[in-house]
Figure 1: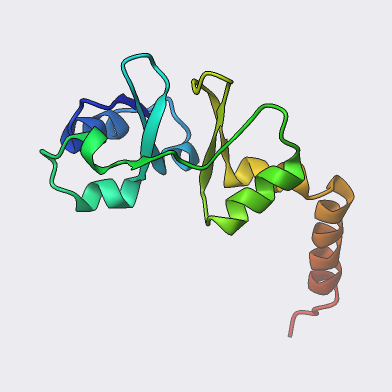
Figure 2: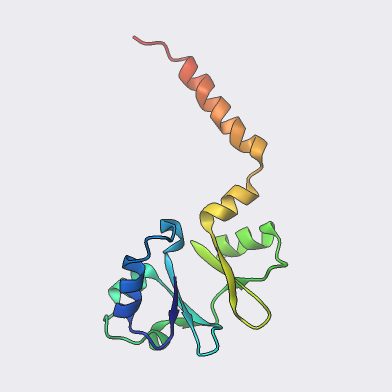
Length: 134
């Protein structure tokens, strides 16, 4: 969720509440943008809920947030997300503008090979198939 860094926490939470077009997994972090539209900071949704709703975003967001670049590969991205326990990771251009956001679901889907995912399904089917009704 992108917001202006001059908005209050309450304003940002209202935007999250009414963001019906956003996927729920992408609504775990509020990204605060400066006057030029560049990423100024971010705050996790739970932290925002715990703050005073009248607090201004620019005063409570973490500056210089962890982010990815378009040239980063999936190993770098998943490692960064794991190292910093991130549910989302913003992708920034050279000027600090958000190009997109990677969710942990996106990262896992890209990192786990298709045959490995199918392997798990086949194992579950084998285990379930060997159980006879009693």
